Length: 305
Length: 258
Image 1 (cartoon, each protein chain N blue to C red):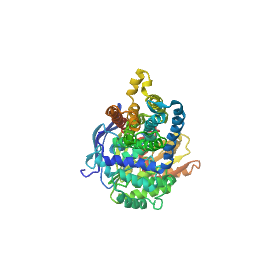
Image 2 (spheres, chains in turn brown, green):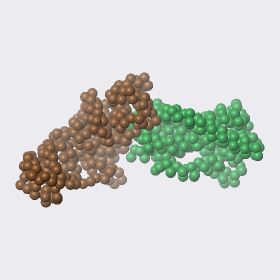
Image 3 (cartoon, helix red, strand yellow):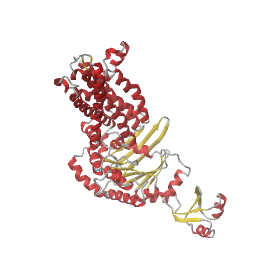
Image 4 (cartoon, rainbow over the protein chains, first blue to last red):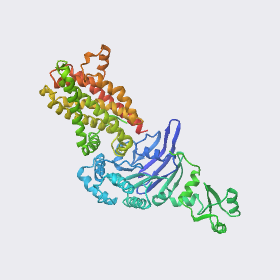
């Protein structure tokens, strides 16, 4: 697609003799929220760092607004919300935004009115003169989002924007991000919170070991890869116990730790059996992105990466 | 990375950030800038000077004041380029936040280097005033020329310090640099006594060190001592500043943009 915001063709990243990104292809249409999902060490961060010109690509073509990602002119059209809090601890809320505006060459006069707008947008009006250290985690994250918007970017890149926030703060962030999408901004989001991806993403890729495992809208991906119903059960003795419980039913079994997941098109007979065994705790729910994620990336523990 | 890609406005934006942080704590910082040299000059200049009398043909207070001016420019720029820059690079993620804007790593390094030299100039100006009050300045005509030299000295020490910062695993690493580079220069580059008191080999070695050349420029500008080969001294300081910049930019890129 020619008007894509981001186009990757055969993008590869090699560290030493190991490929961290193994020649991936994707493109991102303007105005959507695009999710990059994957377990730790899948290559999400590397893919993002390359996009932001913070990590040279080993081979392939990675374009941002029709220009190579290495061209620094493109950075003026991008806003970045990193996962790590790197606000200036010595500055007030306003001064954080003002100094950051200076990095983009935004004049002081223009920055002032922009800052008022952004403080309102981030529900931080009235906190402008507070020191950053006095803000709550949610406020700091909203300030980081505001900071990323100071240059009025067309593309906003977010790395796990709601990690570590309480539910209220998290929903407020999500709501702000959705309103950015309404304004026509393109969002790229890396996350391993499936709930976050389901809330926000119009389209996503699942990345593992440097390969794109699948791509699509959350709804279609779930329909394509996972059975519609799930019963998650705890309290089963072992695998034999699990298989005997499901005996004769058309279900797919899987487990993470002590929780067994039974996937199928009609899980009601299984629910009836579970009710007869009071020692079991279970929940019957529609399949989610999490089920898709676990199915595609496996259930083994990953090292931090 | 193209190290020559340096936009003055972008470098200035990063410099301004550091300036604004400094401004918040300027009072405390200035107290140190005035207080330390005042004590040094009072303690050593009057105390030792009483016994020493003249050194190198000028009163010891004047001899020492010009030396302290140089060593403080060295220390100030080195501290800024090591500890403060490391905090911004490593602990606070300041550089990373800046790299998400159109500003590139070589512009950050240039701004840090110029900022460190600015701090040398600020503390140098304070010592200048103290030295003037204590009678450490003999030549008021040429004395003000010492200020740009202090700035250049700051650049010459900030460059290598930023290179060390870019490879440092932690703050502790900087102790090596102080013990192996900064302290020897403090003691053997003519701050406290003339170089010709040293053995011949030591004198030759001292000629390779930037502090020697800073002292050789600044002392004659403030005192009655004659100035010899000024351009040689300026060239050596500039060479340290420029090569330090290239090295620091290269190493910082290697650390942050991999």
